[in-house]
Image (cartoon, rainbow, N blue to C red):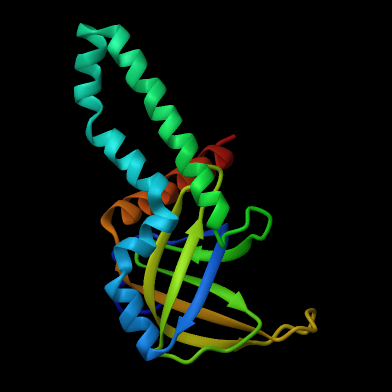
Length: 193
C-alpha cells in the first residue's frame, strides 16, 4: 500500500456516458476558450435551467402558498422552456444517446478509452451526457496521459486517455457531483439488498 496521500478532491466513479472529445490545435484552443460560455450553452442549457430553478425554489414555494394559480402557470411555462431547450440541444447536439462510452468520471476529470493516441499536454474540448437524467456538460481539459492498453482479447488497439478539466462551469461541476453521488447511493442500495 502506498504511503502517498490521495491528492484527489473529488470522488471518482465508473460510468457509461455519451461523450464528445475533440483535441484542439493551439489556435482552436484560444478561440474555444474565448467563446467558452457560448459553446457551453450549446451543451449545458438544461443544466443552467435546472440550476436556476433550484436557486429560485424558495421563491416558488412562497408563490405556491400565496398564489397557487400563478405557481401553476409558472410551472407550465417552465415545462415549455425545458421542452424547447431539449429540442434545441437535440437538433445540434454531437452527443448521441445511442453511443455510450465506459469512463471513469469525477468533477475534476475523466478517463476513457479511444482507438487513437493523443499528445499529453494538449487541450481538448469535452462534452458529456450522463444517464438517466440526460444532463450534459461541456468543458475544456488538458490531456494528462494517453497510454496504450494491452488487451489480447481485443484485436483493436486502445489508448487509455486521462483528461483534467481546466475549464468547467460551476453549474456543470455541481451537476457532475450530484450525478456521482446518485450513482454511489444506487450502488450502496444494491449492495445492501
